[in-house]
Image 1 (cartoon, rainbow, N blue to C red):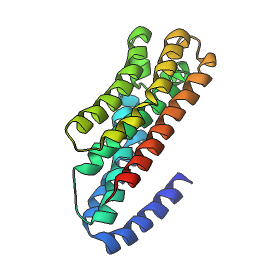
Image 2 (cartoon, rainbow, N blue to C red; image 1 turned 90 degrees about the vertical axis):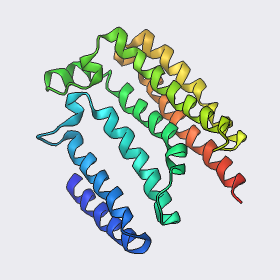
Image 3 (cartoon, rainbow, N blue to C red; image 1 turned 180 degrees about the horizontal axis):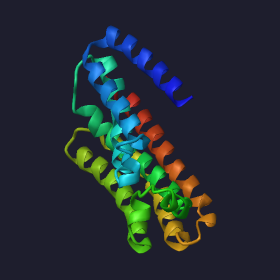
Length: 203
């Protein structure tokens, strides 16, 4: 089923490339490579502590690709806009690895949550969330984003609450469901707020 979805995505990407330009093929090829290398042998990057980087690059690529289809040229702007969202998506993957830590370790899936001591692994979550909103704040300050884009920092409250729950229940992952839901809420609400602001401020 996974390979079927991959074929559908490739065919759709080829059609979009024909409509928007060959540059989209590069983005699509990188996306396919990341999707394959994430879990397939021999690379299995998620089992080598690089899964978070794959998710970050993959979801950032979605934003860059969508921008290319409309702009028909490469730009740094979609990276500015998409990086906080990609970091928050990465946090969703990250926190979901805590409940599976023991099973993943036994299966040889040595991602960051398995590799790091529990006390250090817990700290990665607020670090990623802080990076997301620090990135946004920097580019608002640099006037590459409108001031109202700071409204999309409000979901930091969800991330902060989730970080506290993770710190409390990291060793008992059965209680992490609320933290996972808060992480999902932070990701989606940030994207919604920022999208609405950018649509409103579009010339």
